[in-house]
Length: 215
Image 1 (cartoon, rainbow, N blue to C red):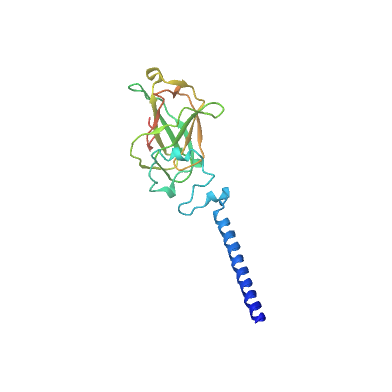
Image 2 (cartoon, rainbow, N blue to C red):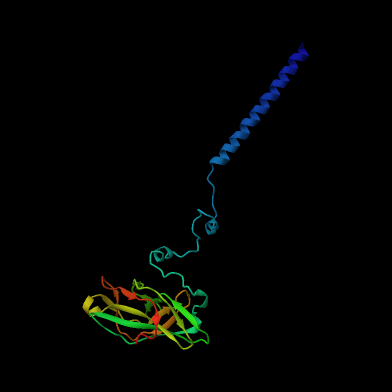
């Protein structure tokens, strides 16, 4: 009788120990689940759907996305590269309070290449600092311009005459021009005098490339 009682008591003690161990293990799982996870900064570079943008993306990418961009060139495989081009600015053709300059790119290579859309453009001072806001694109219809060796295309750059508009002005040292779909710019000495850089009438506008020099 005594041995039977002892056996039952030992079994109860074992069962109680197992139950207590299970409770402790469960509490440990709950603690881990409730703890916040620390995500490494580099995880932002993932490209999976629903992930955040890469940490290396420049902050101005958001504002640039609001600017209408030209559609992809139908002849993008033959586009002109910066290394194949030279840049110049033609004579002013003023009218109705507007100053109008042709920005010309010339094919210096030995192959035929194409330009499509708008150039990138910015006025800069002697130290390379940009003067005024980025030019705005007009609503013109882009076309593919084929440039044979030695051929040229021009894009119009215009702004209101500062004496008429009353905008704040500066005299740039150069105009920096970037061909469509390229990253490397070309620099042209600016000889067109003062340009608007501040105020309500400081907008500079661009029209798409057309064949020729705009003269």
